[in-house]
Length: 262
Ligand SMILES: O=C(O)CCC(=O)C(=O)O
Image (tube, rainbow, N blue to C red; front, top):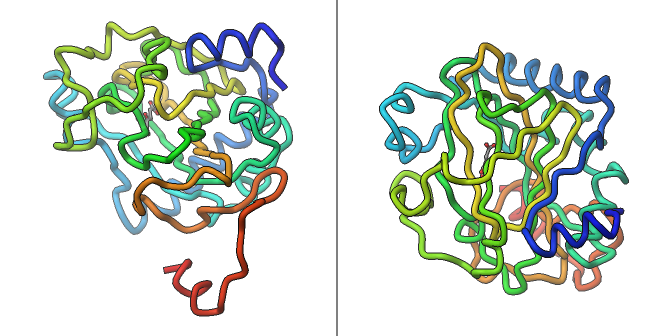
């Protein structure tokens, strides 16, 4: 649960950094899981997921990369356990304002040393809009993310603006001149910290120029009673209940079950 001060901070700003949600030992072990998974997957693909628009943000960004995998719970049981960890879901439930928490998707990111790609400022909402805007992200930091490692940056209070108009080329992002990455508030984090924020909060991150990788897992969660406004961004594992129950679910036929795994 959040303390009353943390809840008030979230209410005002649309984000909260929770310190030490995982112990340094746990963070280190998840860091290893991420890097082991990346090594297994890189045998098949280069795993680079830098946005086309990220490369346009500066001259230095042109040669940057970020390694990524969606829905890591399909690759390692360690991540499956983490998704239902009470420490994570209790805070998610508190922020969402529902006893029930449903998974939308997960993404691991490794921003490699010296040339880890930035994320242009954006809201997540244009990617997967929902009727009641209950969707939140939790970014779990498995190693320290100082400013020079390309830590998260946010625009406090921006979640109160509703869905902003984004440019769609190279990933949904806000105009670079109106929302330069460097002008947003830096949220440096330590291994084991978790940053929770609304999918309406404007956020992004800078280049990792340090000599260490930045390793994170992003978990996107919603109230199961909040419906997608449009059918988009569906993926394996979406709909899994992480806490409580799905109060509106109906039985699925075998055909529908098969459709769901495609
Ligand atoms: O990991 C980061 O630096 C930001 C990730 C992000 O904003 C996203 O995936 O939408």
